[in-house]
Amino acid sequence: MKFFVDTAEIDQIKELHALGMVDGVTTNPSLIAKSGRDILEVTKEICDIVDGPVSAEVVALDADTMLAEGRKLAKIADNIAVKVPLTWAGLQTCKALSDEGTMVNVTLCFSANQALLAAKAGATFISPFIGRLDDINLDGLELIEDIRTIYDNYGFETQILAASIRSANHMSGCAKIGADVATAPPAVIKNMANHVLTDKGLAGFMADVEKAGIKIL
Ligand code: G3P
Image (cartoon, rainbow, N blue to C red):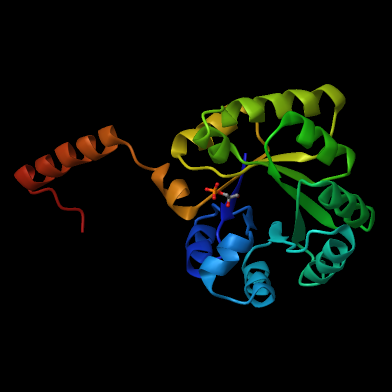
């Protein structure tokens, strides 16, 4: 499973990138707003750091303006994936941009039917928001499973990019199901390293190091 990092914070991207943890980056208007940066400027900076796909989202609601915005975003770098919402206008934009050879990430997906439409419209990535489904007592991981089944049934090449990931369990859950990509905030990726038994075991080793005066350097 590829790891994308869901942030527009340059320092955090650089830290994870240095560890080989960043196969791509996703942003959205909320993350751009949080960064306080200009969308074109910060997106270009991210593309200079990361070789993999960098998602940048349109902000218009109608297809013509979305398409113009998408074309402008696509010019930032070769690794831009234009992100469009899963609306009818978003699907029209997805088809037009895909036909032009631009990667498209269709976002705000909450159902298997929406994912099926995105694949038919030529999406490179579909972004099901699993955390937001869990928030309303539905099962986000079940949606990932359903989309995996549907895409595999028909050989769709659209990649499942699990998004709105809130926990380390979401990451392993997506990997078990076979999501192609998971995009997560940096804190969630770092939290995957944590285990209470690791901490306990290390404390025990350190106590013995102290007792025996073990030194290596
Ligand atoms: O990748 C989508 C993500 O940014 C949304 O996450 O936590 O706001 O639902 P969240």
